Length: 187
Ligand SMILES: C[S@@+](CC[C@H](N)C(=O)[O-])C[C@H]1O[C@@H](n2cnc3c(N)ncnc32)[C@H](O)[C@@H]1O
Image (tube, rainbow, N blue to C red; front, side, top):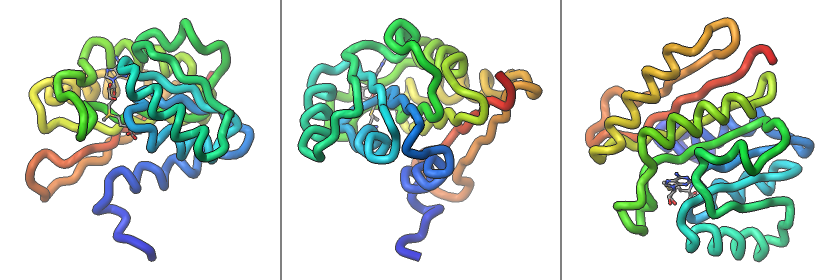
């Protein structure tokens, strides 16, 4: 064991993603940011689409992936709520890492209404047995609303079509990150 997996929520999520990835799959990173997740996806998939509303995030991520010798990606400086206008194929794995960039401008955070719209569109793009993974940060005000809306939305999904799982830490302080996972069981 190289690390204590359940104490590192982002690594925990990536271990789950691995089970849904192979060299033929298509992934979407709905919140590119510094590009860490986009890089991981591009290294493990046939193709990855990425979205971010910050030009700097898109430019930095493009450089990061190019510097790793990768060209199997397309990045959009657009809101993830418009993803259906940019992508014409089904995806095997769609990831959201909500909130704001830790070293960026805190006012540029994901927002409840656009996040829910993007999640609805993601579920339409998701292939059967594909995975939607949402990392929730709820230490800030908008994050609290976003979390509530997401949980309500995920609970209301048709159980015949979707299977939804919620991973939350129950004994740590300061609103630790949580993972919401949704898979599509039928087309
Ligand atoms: C927590 S960061 C993502 C971190 C990233 N996954 C990484 O590995 O560095 C959240 C990102 O979501 C972006 N964002 C906020 N609203 C967005 C929207 N409507 N559509 C796409 N990206 C958005 C922010 O600009 C920010 O870069």
